Length: 432
Image (cartoon, rainbow, N blue to C red; front, side, top):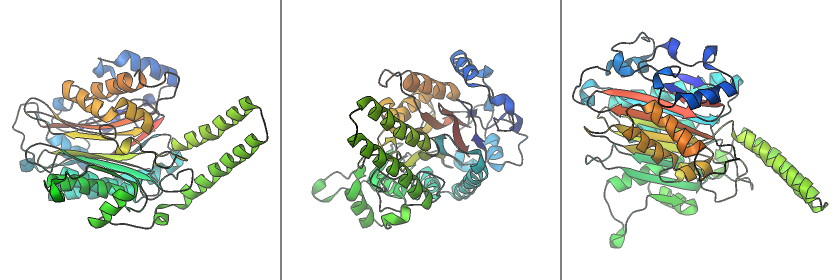
C-alpha cells in the first residue's frame, strides 16, 4: 500500500517504481514551488521520462520493495517479453483508491494512511479469493463511505437545509463474459447506508438481463426517494438519515449556516449591493475552501480474470442546493471502465474535484479515451487535465479548476498494470 499526500500538481506512480523514486512528504525534491510547477507542467507534455518518479515498469523484472506486498505482486507480472494474458493463472488482482483531491491537513495523515491501509488490505485479500473487479470497487468504496474522514456516506457534507444527499456510481466490466459493461448510479439519497452498494446492485440487475413487467427496460440511474424505494426492495441496507450525519459534518454545517443567515439579515438592512455581493462571496469562498479538505472517494480495480471496474461516491459540495447532482452519479463523468483486447488496453478511471466542472469536461470518459490511444498512461492523464479540464472552452477561464483523476491501465499482450493519477489541486490521497 502506498500513500501520497503531496503539493505536487501532477503525481504518478508506476508499479515497478522503487520507494526512493516515489513522491513523499519527506522527499522534498518532489515539492517544487507553484511557479516552477506551472513551468514544469507546460514543458513536460510529451517528455515523460523527464517527469519525477517515472519508471517504465516493463523495463524492470523485479523490485526492491519486498516489504510492500501489493507493489511486489504487481511487479511480478511485468515482463519484457509478450505473453498471453493469463491473470487467473498468475492469481494477481489490483485495487487502487483515492480519498479526494483538494487540501488535506497534515495532522490527519496518520488517519488517512490507516484508512487506506485497512481498505486496501481487506479488498486485496478478497481479490485473491476470486471476487470480481466490480465487487472489489464496491467493497472498497463501501469501507471508505463508513469512515467519517471522507465526504461520502457517513460524514457527508450537508445541504443548505441540513440534509444528507449522497451520489454514487459503479461501472463494471467484470460481470459479463461478452466484454460489455454495466453501469449503475444513485443520486440525492439520504436513507441508503452505503450508496455505492445501491449503484452496484443497479449494475448487477442489468447484468442479469432481466426485464421489468410488460417488457420495460430496467433503470441504470435513480434519484431521491425513487432510488431509496428501489434499494429497499432489492435488499440494500438502509438507515435513518440522521445516522449518516457525523458530529464534524453537523458542526461545519452550523458554522456556515449561521454565516449565511447573518449575511441574509445584513443584506435586508442595506441597499449597498456591492458590499452585499462582496460579503456573499466571502461566505461561499470560505465554504469552498472547506470543500477542499474532503471530496469524492473512488476506486479502480483489476481482478484475477483480467476484468476491470471503477466506482465513485460523494456527499457533494458543502451547503449545496437540495437536488444537486454531482459527477459521482453522472454517466461518463465520475467513473469509467472498459475491458481491452489484443489491440487495446483495459482501463478504469474515477474522478474527484468540483462536480460541475467534471461534468462539463466529461472527465472520466475523456481520460479513458486518452488512455486507450496513448501508449504512455502518464501522458494520457496529464493531457486530460491540461486539455480537457484546465484549457477546456466549456469552463470559465477565470475560475479555479479543481480536478483529480485516478486511473488503472493494463497493457495488452505484455501483462503489465500501471496505476496513474494527477490533480490540479494542492493534494490528493492515493492508496493501493
